[in-house]
Image 1 (cartoon, rainbow, N blue to C red):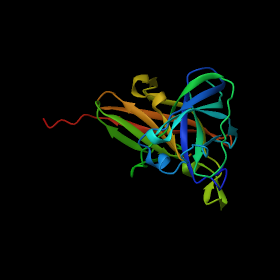
Image 2: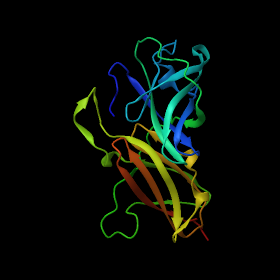
Image 3: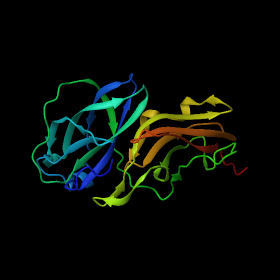
Image 4: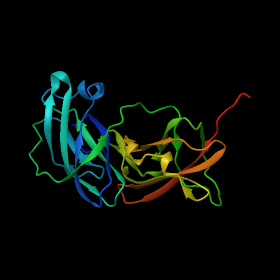
Length: 250
């Protein structure tokens, strides 16, 4: 998918987390009141808001609530497709064009799924995700944290995605993240489920996947594995080494 329509000037990634079986679900999207990028450019009526799946399919939706003056809004989006349990599905919220109202009153389906929009700017330090070198026995990238730290790992998967030869509406995107199918932390072959929260996983700009990690035992090396699929149906398993080490001045 690329920018679906040149008349829409803004978009944001929405990550919907599903614990249920494969199927089609509804999702509730609630923009934060302090999200200036949205409220500073959206039409006061909200009529320019649209939702699309990561592969470019238009999603039906309704405005469950909308009060521009107080910056409060809620959208119910339908047609979010999952292929297994415990998946994070990316879809896009577009706005910024002067247009007629696109909201309807779709039938209520399964769900709703829990959704999150990542409002943070991209940090200076990210993991440039890539396949592991041939013959490697440990991940090429190492991250260190203390046992009491809760950290976010920003995975930049852009180098794994296909780009358009020439820009389309000013954007090179052709292939983007579609679904995050698994986030695991392990050591010695044993999974450490307490060290990650799949429901806290977020996606930004179709290329960044953000995972949350906590706890661990000091002096232990862990492997963080991220599995995702793209809008062109390709599947990747990328990894980093997470070293947990408490520092003592004694």
